[in-house]
Length: 102
Image (cartoon, rainbow, N blue to C red; front, top):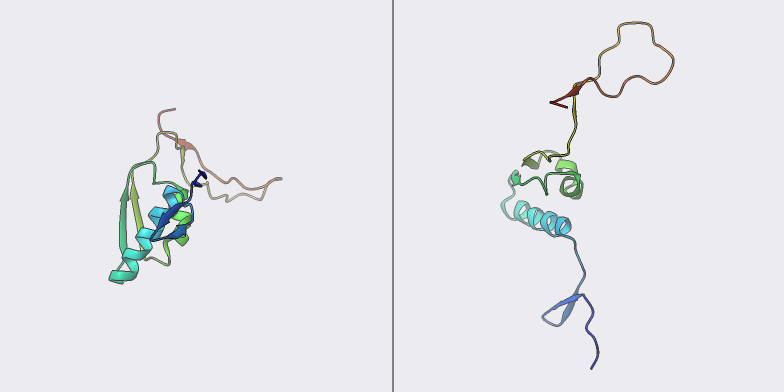
């Protein structure tokens, strides 16, 4: 008896392994291709990170919109302060003050 690989078969053809993010992005692209409309994706915090967004080409020029609950481990920052002074040594600040309760 030969062991089967972890790759699935459909109608006798081998299907390549895809992660949950790759599967979700493929399904969302198929929906957009069928309807030719903008797509609003409502997701929980597990999908609401860069894993799904990057597979959708960062919004596809406004075709995809992602609405998600924020992850519990996210850190929010205010915008970096605009410096009106003469430039100091070192790189300019990337983030402003940390927001939230911590």
